[in-house]
Amino acid sequence: MTHSQTPVNGDQNLDSATPRAKTLRITSLEDVIAQLHQNDRSVREVNLADVTWHDVADARPARTFRAYKGRKHYDGLWWSSTTRSLVGFESLHERAFLLTADSDPEVVHISSQPMALTGPDLVSERERNRIPDYLLAYADGSVELVDVSTPKRAVTDRVQEATGWLRHVCLLRGWRYRLWTGDDPVRLRTLRHAAGYRNPRLVAREDLDIVLESIPEYGVSIRQLLSDLPPQVDPLRVIPAALHLAWHGHIGLNWSTKLRLDTVLHARGADADEAVA
Image 1 (cartoon, rainbow, N blue to C red):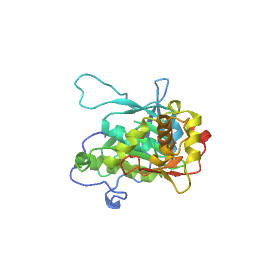
Image 2 (image 1 turned 60 degrees about the vertical axis):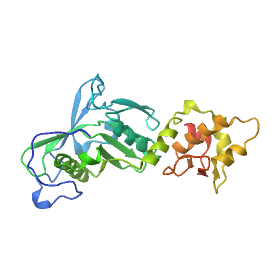
Image 3 (image 1 turned 90 degrees about the vertical axis):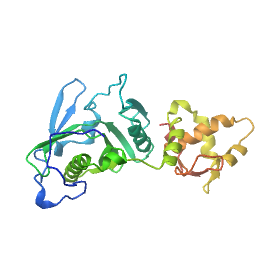
Image 4 (image 1 turned 45 degrees about the horizontal axis):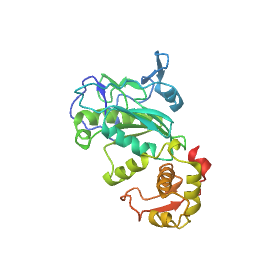
């Protein structure tokens, strides 16, 4: 998680959806400014109340990703099946979060380092500067800002104060806020396996059709799916197609269990055109 701030008053834990009203110095978004880095290298300053996720989608990340010898963090770019573009991450922990966000069929947009926010602190006269790690837009129109941290760092006073400020700003804006510290390791491992087949260029339309036509409403195990294939169908092409469909939410499986031959796939009524669109 990244945060930049001036010193603030010490020992209060502000990581809650509704900090105590008597301590708040920020009651509106009037003085909260978002800096959006434009593609022409200019910086556009907008009151956060007027920022939409479309503005963020049209902007560049607020901070560039640099990789160099000796760097302790593992920076990189993730090809997102949601945005059909590269989304940056600054650690393997952030990449794990991207796994969960990119595989969520309700997420319609992901921006990394979406904007730089500046505004008055919650409990002092000082100004706070903040760059959230991610912005997610959902199919229902809702927007969520996400910071990624390890469980150990998430409970420190510095992170609690920074996330408490951003949580309250999101509350005023009508957005959600989340501090992501990790997920079930088995679920992440299964998602990581399926992510290898998320790109539609890696699967054939006819293989998607075969999988969708072979899964009954009550479900079928991968083992049974393979054994029921016609002789002319290559099973090595069917498994990638099945994982591609599962990643995009067109068929279901239990992500919280290890991927095995007895893993059950469930039909969700999608067609191959949707799956590769």
